[in-house]
Image 1 (cartoon, rainbow, N blue to C red):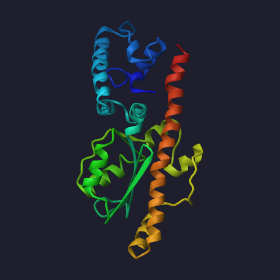
Image 2: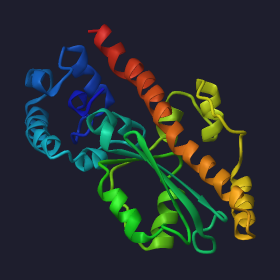
Image 3: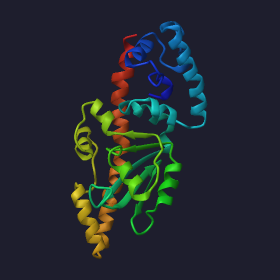
Length: 250
């Protein structure tokens, strides 16, 4: 599913109206037929489509992200797949006011980068990575990762953001990232670690154990790399239940 299949970013169009459009054969912006809705709403949708093409030509999905509900922002992914940054952080605790970020991993395209406190983890590096990204994907990052980075590094994260936790809930996948990975069959090559383990490994590294940092980085990188197949799995399920079902009913 792509943004061009979506009408719910338009003011006044909810899931019911969008489904009615799809069931009447209007499954893409190019197929829009104003007769399916009232004149006022038709004008609004036509304006949205005209402006939407301009945004997509620039590779800018921020307008759509602002208009879509959190659980529907997965629809942005196919339009900016190669410019999507999957991000995860490790910290020394749960409070951005009292604790520090230890590592940040970003997976984009076929490359994963990890930045480490005291080495290359700086506000400038984070801002540069985010500027190169059209879409940010996290798991529980809306409440944790992004506020932590903004507080600790005094940056403003404005990249359109998909917090995977919300579309996962929409398809009945609850719990933490690793539990959901197991449920959908995404494996890891390393033993399962927890946030508490990540704190311990950082303190062991500070005490001189370089191997502990290597393991922490491996753990952090696995979180970002596994988010990509998870998003694709969840997006596939949502595409089937939201879009294809409506098209079959047409």
